[in-house]
Length: 208
Image 1 (cartoon, rainbow, N blue to C red):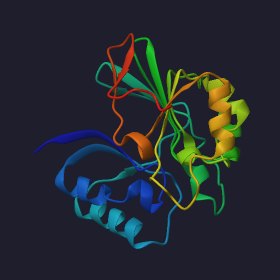
Image 2: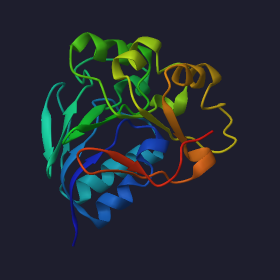
Image 3: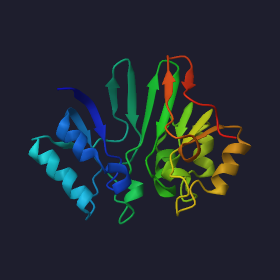
Image 4: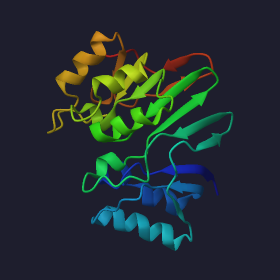
């Protein structure tokens, strides 16, 4: 049976943990990361049930901790000790992954308050590739945060014709002003970024 080094459920919303129960049922996993918040949904209950049935345990990582992933490593950026109340998005586990000279930033659905806390942490947020927070929502991706990340590329994960209007025009205008090359799943389907430690290549051209 194949084994995963890590599984990260950024936060307990269905679009971020849906299907993770099946993955963990079929594959062994050394470390399962979940935030400290919970959700009263069938999807979340099934995930926790599967973890229990497999006699696995959940790890709530701490801000600043670094984990090895082959020749790469990633650092936890989220203030996982903070209570963000009913806003499950702000509990999102955010990571900065580095491999050689290249870096990737993934922040789940973290919104403005969580971004402010990451900025205040003093941790390095800069990244070559930034996976847009909350599908390109305007409740996240603040100007100060984007300036700290200063990405070359931005990947936006969102459904075609979604009812939320993601990605929002304000966010798109910001990254365009910064000269960031944008990739969008609603226009281009599955997007794959490959790093050799010096450069990052994508399986498609940037969105126009």
